[in-house]
Length: 203
Image 1 (cartoon, one colour):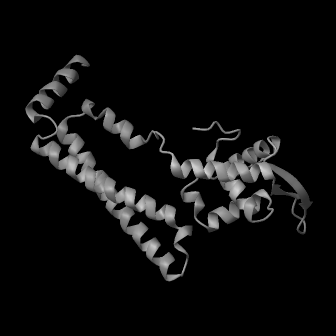
Image 2 (cartoon, helix red, strand yellow):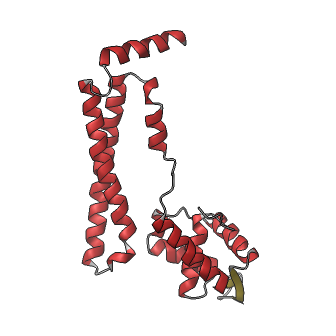
Image 3 (cartoon, one colour):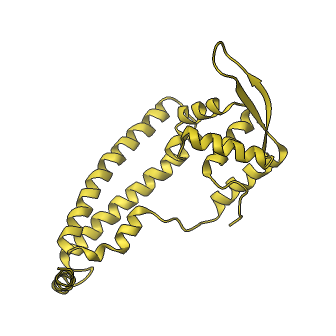
């Protein structure tokens, strides 16, 4: 994986905004939120201004002008440089083509789930499944709304991806909970005895 001069994914969003036209940071944030990109890329104003400064420092963007509306403070409008455009294209190409290891909270929890008794794990997975059911229903409704509005699919394809991942996660989580209860994951008697032995050691 290429080592980026500015590696925060928010920088990628800034470069993409400026590919359309020069903007000031507030307009970038508004554009990203209006398009729902803040659901895929963490966005807050403090980080945004830090990212803009870093991109400018590495000459991926440059200040074009300052503007003022009424009594508001001056705002600096930035534009993309040729180097910034190349970075944007190369970065997105890498993200789309090259799988990388991502450390998720759920995976971390699963890797250490053995500290709990099997019945607790199954119950917690049931709880997660119910939450996923609600989230999936909401996502399907949102995608249906976008389709009815005539929004081109390419602009919501990331939502389709997240929905597909959530649906796969739900199916797998339900299956795991059932397999824990049936003893397919590990013999329940042995697991319970193992857990009780660990529990006694900490008392």
